[in-house]
Image 1 (cartoon, rainbow over the protein chains, first blue to last red):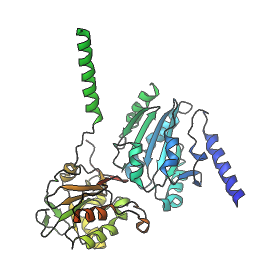
Image 2: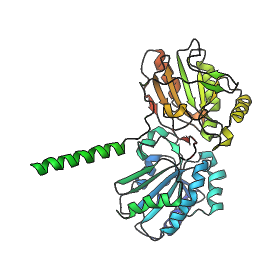
Image 3: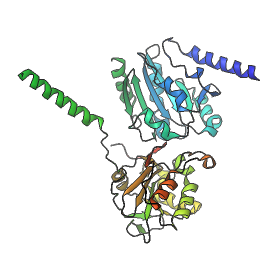
Image 4: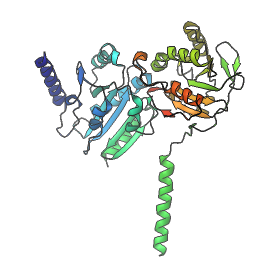
Length: 179
Length: 204
């Protein structure tokens, strides 16, 4: 049993790694996730995810907090998919942090990601003690979804509502890439 | 010297601009602020205001709606809160802040249907024209403003620390805050963040 878990872990870690075409493009959330639902790494605690989201290098990270039940999140999802495709091979990484409910990871999140063939990396965060970590994402964030954090090194910008167009998202990302 | 003064002026201007840019624009009520009263239509058709409620020691003003999964997960707990604390002088006063043109599931008739289905024992008010929620600075559903009888905000934020599983709750923030008020103390914590849905408005 233990061996099986080890192999699942190793395979998952490898598959996440294989998708990462640029070696410098850490984080590889899959390697430190506590468990997986399908190929999606699941984090029980924000403490474990935090270093992945705060890794310090010259890559621009677009970290979107969303959920399958959040209608405005789904509406803006195409912009993140488009961004992911447009910046492939560049130092830009989209991370979609799902806040779907833990009991719906198998029934809602995984089918959504699979059916849509969602390309950007998806991570599930199920730390329900929200007050302990919302401020660590950004003190300005009230907890309302969606929210998007764009960061590169110490430079950060938080967008507290959904994007109304792809251009709106890309303009912010461009300003970070050119830093 | 002149150059120095000019530089200082520049630096100061820059600093002022930076501060202006950094502070969030929406003011919103904080603990210690006096909350505005309102007059909103209840699902039973009557107009409800805080001043119109008799024999109260405070109000559990809750921005919530029909459509947000988090709001739905808290419906039963809001009912329990009201049943437990309304007799002690702290009724739940629920306000639905979403624009039904953006979120049709939150139309007044849908609110009435939901209130009937669930048997809400508390007022479920429609913030028609979205006038009240900006005065409070509410940003999501569900979100609580616990007011004392002078309408002073004493606690704001989450109901408890586990939205998804009522049985696994370890800290009941609102209940603890009321207990603090009852014993003449300030609630601690007085502000707790939680995940919720954005309040739905038309894009300006």
